[in-house]
Amino acid sequence: MPVPLAGAGIRRLRRRNPRDPAPESPHGGMSPTALAERIDVMNETTTHHMTRHHETRPPVIAMDHVRATFGRRTVVEDVSLHVRRGTVYGLLGPNGAGKSTTLSMLVGLVAPAAGDVTLFGKRWERSSLARVGASINGPAFYPHLSGRANVRIHADVLGLDGDAVDAALGEVGLLDAARAKAGRYSTGMKSRLATAIAIVGNPELVVLDEPQNGLDPAGIRYMRGLMRRIADSGSTVLFSSHLLTEVAETADDIGCIVAGRTRFEGPLADFAPNGDVERAYFGLFDDARSWEQAS
Image 1 (cartoon, rainbow, N blue to C red):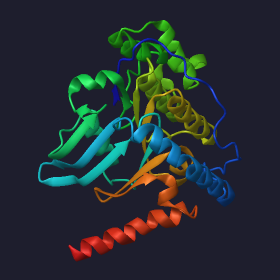
Image 2: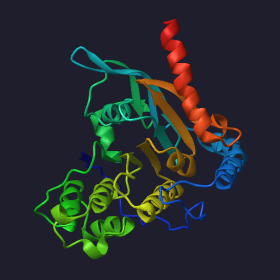
Image 3: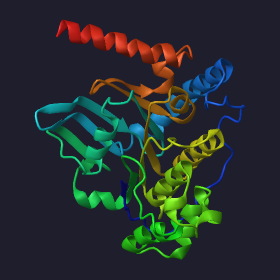
């Protein structure tokens, strides 16, 4: 569900070309050559980013050994993640791994059963959500209202004007369809509307739960560029996905969750130094099985 967030003032996001303009496959993937080039870029920039952000300021998000239970069922066993300011962080994992529950704990929709959560360098408190925009567990909107009206409701809560609404709709490519009822939107348009609600007012932190769902290849590419623009403007993006190539093309840092546990966290270049993200990813499942058998 979208979580309304306040931002101080209206700041248009700086536009830039997508980082990797190489042609995509119909599935939104990328060639081995393009992937290797992406890893090379990460190798060159990781040290700079760590010096500029990590050493001088606390992470925007710090979740340490959090656990979530629903009744007697444990859905998140032991997850830790740390998101640096001004970066795109990809939370990777298969369906059912606990990604959405982890994001829900971050924005206060689920109470952690254990562990610590901090936002903007302070222990989690609800008032911190005034600096966050989020879309969790799929699009949530009023189907009988127009796209613009749906975003306007959230803007009104945040004390923002119509310019902020149009800016958010324009960023996700829905300005021309803003007067149509949201219930008549395609699956991809509904996903874009949820993102518009999350970014209205330019919050300092944007949290998106599988924002590529329902998008065609062009929409996926646009969403990738949008997340990079948000980070380039100085804000921070945390997004979840089960799509390897999208995380590889978009994220600066990644966290991998398997069976409710963090199996890797760090720069993309450290995750797959040779550029073989797929092999590194599936290697986590082998490690997880070995750990479970030994425990």
